Amino acid sequence: MKEKEIKTFYREYSNPAEMDESERMLIESASEAAGKAYAPYSHFMVGAAILLDDGTIVKGANVENAAFPSGSCAERTALSYAVSNYPDRWAVAIAITALSKGIMTSEPVPPCGNCRQMLLEEEQRIGKPVKVILAGTERIYVMQSSESLMPLHFNKTNLNL
Ligand code: THU
Image (cartoon, rainbow, N blue to C red):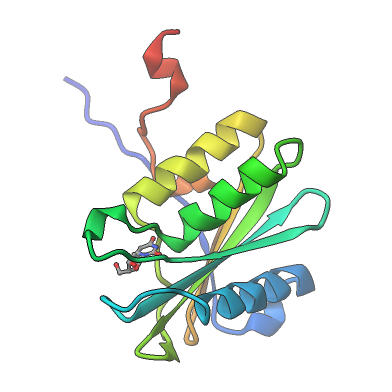
C-alpha cells in the first residue's frame, strides 16, 4: 500500500491592482455577464467571461429552468458558445463572478464539477492550460490551469479509444 498526496496551487489576490490589466478586464466582463443571468429560481446570478487566444472575449451566464437539471451554468454557457462559434480558437483564461441577491459575492465562487470537467476537456482539446480566475469582492483566486481544480479527473485517455 502506498499513501499518495496531490498538491494543487493557486494565487490569492486581495488587491486587484496587483493583477494584469487583461485579468481585471476579464473579471469586469464576467460581472457584466452575471447581470444578464436568467436565475429566477436560485436568484444566484453567475457570469463567466472567456478570453480566447486572439483576444476575443466570450461571455455567458447561468440559464435556469423550471425542470432544474435542464438549466446551464455560466461557465458551460460561455464555453459551449466559444467552442461552437470559434472552433479554430481556444480559451486561454476564464473569469467567474456571481451576484447573490443582486450583490457581488465577497468570496470567489468555484465552478461546479460539471463545469470543471468541461474546462478540462478544453485544456485537452487544445493541449494548453486554461487559467481560471475566481473573483469575489474580498479576494480573487487564480489557478494557472483548470487541472488544478480537479486532479484525478476522467479524461479521454481513460476511454482507451
Ligand atoms: N451555477 C453556475 O452558473 N456555475 C457554477 O459553477 C455553479 C452554479 C449556477 C447554477 C444555478 O443556476 C445557480 O448557480 C445556483 O446553483
